[in-house]
Image (cartoon, rainbow, N blue to C red; front, side, top):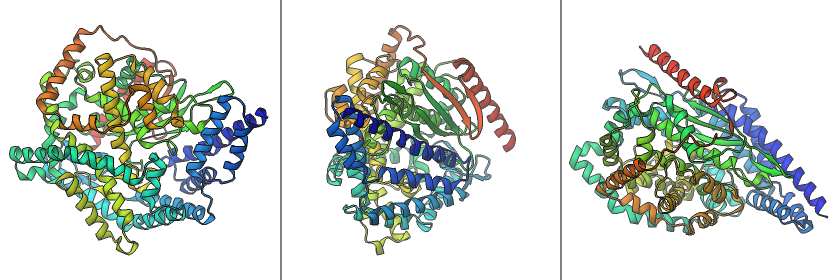
Length: 616
């Protein structure tokens, strides 16, 4: 009897890989702007959704699990049962609404890709604008007119979003969720993604907001007293908080060296990719999706004792010619590289355990990436890796200036994540007739002022996550993840005393967080490593820390790092790495890692020179 169940599991694994790979390959080419096969992608997405929502699978899976005798076989079938319980759509009317929703979102995406946005560059010229370029300008441009143009670009996008189909998609999402038996789409997504009710979610968010309220008000008051009331305006706030520091940091973190810093740092952490194939598209360009992401066309798993390595694609949006882009690009590289490490290390016996959609918790998935990018802010990481062209390490005074600029607004930044959930909750709860463009924009401004104390430097409806059903009503996952990150950091710091180049971290993350995939809950993985359940308190404590305490901690961290023996090179990442720019292969490690890093750095330098010549 077990052989029947095993054959069924193997066939289901194969069927899933086929439909999933087709969808993901078209997702990548469409989102990277290398293909305009929007119809093909929509059809592949609908086929994938239909596979995941097929109600006929569950009764057969339950029957097969009853036939299975081996524990491992039962576990694999159980993973698929959990997967289909999250995704099955039994009502034909709801299934039809899902098809309609996929088509509507695809049409909105296609129109969005054609939208031409502009902003001012440092020479005062109107140039093509992207979301990363606008964000970087707001943080790093010393020219107020440039910053104003960046914020205006965001507001132009917001108006376009509410006028071009987004509100109709919200309506469709609610109709679908209600057909599935939920109050609205927000209710549906929170329960599906995090296995929480909205009430449970907002108990956590409200607690965090309450714990950090005093700190965020104090930060705004201090900024106003130091820089004047104009510093609180949304086009000024990011620059007055960290603009000078961003510009000073730029020479120490050029994007040309980002790939090397990522490879060397992850090697020394003991992170392995288990024979995965990684494709990285790292620079911004016209037609490319304006947000970093990581997707795995082939999930990692064991099939009949044979390892199936992952195939993972991830992207960042660096612009080597723009001040501050090296730092933001490096952050995205570490973040998405953390996702890739997670999805390359899931060791279940079915691909359902290693994918980013329910029953995988978004907060669980983001914990892996956010832990990795959190290392970049550590004083000992900066001292080890941040170097200028002369090879000089970043000075202590600049690290101190970074802390002085950023620590007071740590609470503000994390509350900016919570803000999205408060807005989306109310957006989906609005009566359909009340959900007009003007009312929705007013709701956005209302929640920005309530949570941040001022209008947001990243206006709500310019956040691309809201437009895609996979990431809509899920942004809170980032904040829940940050809470878990601080718990994880605290555990390693207590046990080992340091994080940067700590070779025990990679194996521990692989064993406790990555290996089980969605076979364990987020809370269970935290318990497995740290021995503690989920808590918001560590993040709130870090947010409320004074500048003096944070600097004292950084100094101690740097002193301890000097006393440790050199970390060595670490083991190779065990991955085939391809760096591309659209259809162009920039560098790969087919000959050697050193050749890949040299080719990448040389290409980035040529790219930057060409961009400079074009603008001159």
